[in-house]
Image (cartoon, rainbow, N blue to C red; front, side, top):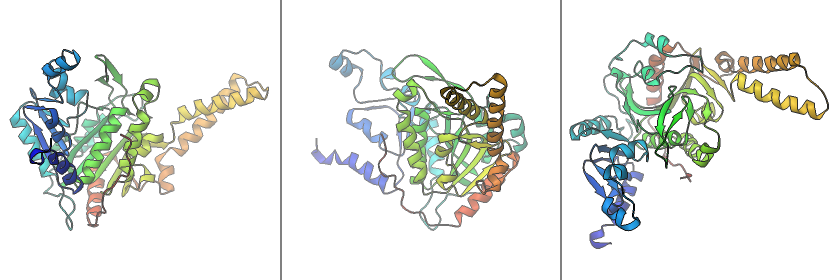
Length: 397
């Protein structure tokens, strides 16, 4: 196995990554057996339709374990982009794949003293004021966060990372005022996704972080640190998914991985709280405790451990059980008064003005001025050229 130092190729992949040397791989054909590890050890993985990536092909799989599977089901581009989450970008053909490589290479940062990529800015493709008609502060209403992003970034260009995997978090590369950025945004539109280990589809709720979306975001955040690309977080998050299915899928482990990546990031981090930002979801999206260089809030922002209604329902239930143990009875009127009292307190304290008065947010901004605020923040961050070494410590994998 070590003839001509063959095994050292894998080692070199890992060492070059640790040295900060960008590696982009394109799978434009069959990539089988040991060779399948090579692209996966690179920073960015692109794969064209009709290509294959697997440890063993259909014939060997059938001979070894008696399982029949087509090359597409076993390791096709669609499977690896939607189910395994291995591929970052699925492309229709070689030409599109090469175009994507050029777009990714265009945004790579440079060593000190010019740490971040900057080119002449281009205006957004759409008017910023259109955000008013897209965004909804009603947590029950859906909207496509890509539409918000399209009104902030240069020329509406957003190179989305693993767009078919972990779809309740949008990750991707863009430019804002000419500055290269990595965007992490909560998708508020519900999505139908392929369940792991099953042929069934499942519904995932917008604004909720699932196992796959946390894993995707963690990898993306680490890539941005590796390539010296500042991070921008757009918050509208209810929190992490709960329940038996979520626990079985490893939601705690995946969430810890994302929080670790955010906590140890060395590139500038800028957060914008658009809607809700609750609980552990706030932490994972680079809340105040995770040292964003700047944290902005829209007037529609809500910023707390949980929403007023959720907090009131939970705390009232706890209080009622306490009173029952003490032998006290509470009528419906008292329940309602208690509920409203808790809800009002939470609503008041989750208002962005409450946070701004305590310096928890740096500014409350008009949604249509988000782009200008980000450009100002990125320009300020660029004045500090030194970036320490990026290290995460032990990651739960």
